[in-house]
Amino acid sequence: MALHCNFVMTSRRDFLKGTGAAITGAAMFETRLSTAEGAPPVHSKDTARRADAGPRDVTLDINGVRHAVTVDPQMTLAEVLRGPLGLTGTKIGCDRGACGACTVWVDGAPVLSCMMLAVDLGQRKLVTIEGLARGDALHPVQSAFITHDATQCGFCTPGLVMSCAALLETNRHPSAEDVKAAIRGHFCRCGTYPHVIDATLAAAKASGG
Amino acid sequence: MVTGDTRTQKHPLGIVPGPLGEIERVVPADEAPPLPPNTQLEWIGKPVPRVSGRAKVTGAVKAAIRGHFCRCGTYPHVIDATLAAAKASGG
Image (cartoon, rainbow over all chains, first blue to last red; front, top):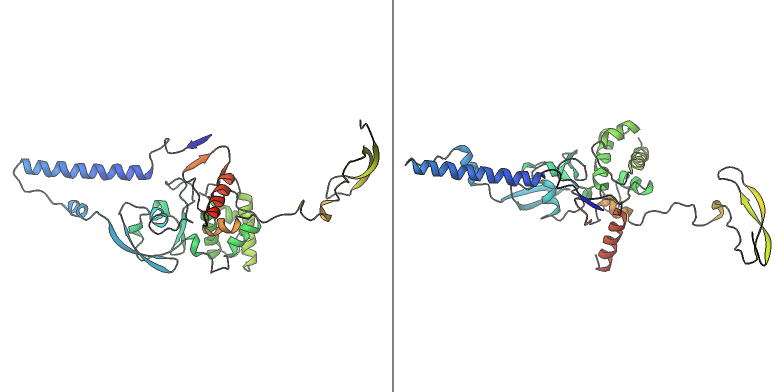
């Protein structure tokens, strides 16, 4: 039995769409009021901001390569990665910051890419699961995930790998509790958590930790 | 109760990694010989690397189940089907 989660709660995307419609409606109402009273239309700071709310060109630093891409301001980082840029290694599980599948690094820190707008990335450096390996040489965490069989369906794996690898960047001697804290917020429906913890500890050991 | 042509055969008895004993049983004449302990076998009891492991940890897997939560736990089959489809189409 397949169970969609979207009918339970309003999705982030629907919320953004609804908010945009409400702002547009309010602007039209404001303009009509002004016109009806014979006064010139009011152009507040917000109105000016709305005027340039269309697609915009941004340059994103992803995995050491700069990508010029045109994005809508409301597009999340995860949507831009998977859509225009074709980097589908980053998975979107819940699209509301609950499952951790979309985790990427922003300036070395794990971030939920479904909870960040692409236009907000600015000049910060982004690393996705595709940029973790050095050519054919896998990151120690990636290798350990394979040898410890820390993947089952593999859908949550990219996010888990990014968080575990980020942990080793800041803590070369993690304990099992450290790993559990690092993967808190990651949802693995297959239940591979024990193997994920073993793999991360083994990767730390293999890296000299 | 074994009927027809029979013979006796010795089987290992016990639970690994504990010590294994041996027991003799009456079996049909065409019974296959007993399997030796796993340590003497080539495949049974040995870990095998997951074929899709590398693709999964590098983000190469393209999953078509975004946003779907399946309570039957058929994700592995969905992934395998996706990989097979990608392979069939030259991906």
